Length: 227
Ligand SMILES: C[S@@+](CC[C@H](N)C(=O)[O-])C[C@H]1O[C@@H](n2cnc3c(N)ncnc32)[C@H](O)[C@@H]1O
Image (cartoon, rainbow, N blue to C red; front, side, top):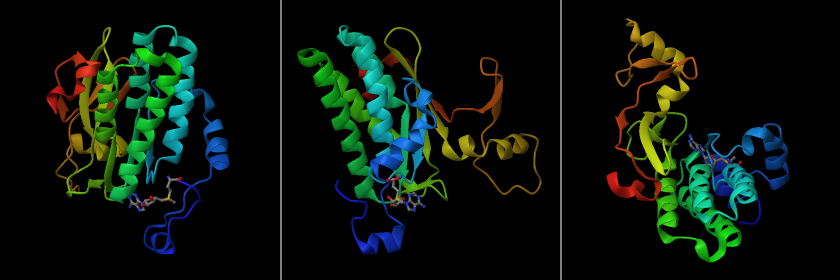
């Protein structure tokens, strides 16, 4: 999309002014190392058509290509991980659709250029599915999705080989950790009824919210299997 504004009305109604590439790159350079780490997670709230996510994805895929262009299977697995680490929310459905398509096109084009005829349809299908789950239509202020339910994001972790573990979390829990920890001990003034329990993660030495749903292990190209 050319330009930073689609219409004056959208600017007035939704503050929709897209960030230009120079600013996107300057901001991402402040966390350059993370943008080049294949599995580091990024959330762009109010993502629009995904200006930040698109650039992070390009950077990560450049790393994947540098490491794995001669091993198509490794390339596809790592490109999947890179894509699955990106999350976005926007109020406007057309922006959400544009963002998903844009990220999908980046993966497809980069993969075609890196591993050429070795690219597999099942890899592209898994990428499309993950983008549907990770780029959501919702309100980043109320943390509710377009149906009024709490926004729920999937965490995708490669466990062994090609196997992926999916765990779903509420965005409200991920963002408002300290409040939730309090509610574990029963805050009499809290009116929240969607809080989940928190548990201590030995590996990262921190409290993390419990998942609201866990899925069986599947090969990454079969992530669609459990809906
Ligand atoms: C200033 S644009 C930024 C888009 C993109 N992040 C960028 O930097 O190019 C703001 C975006 O926020 C979206 N938006 C406005 N209010 C929102 C809300 N409460 N929750 C989620 N998205 C919102 C608009 O639809 C628009 O796409």
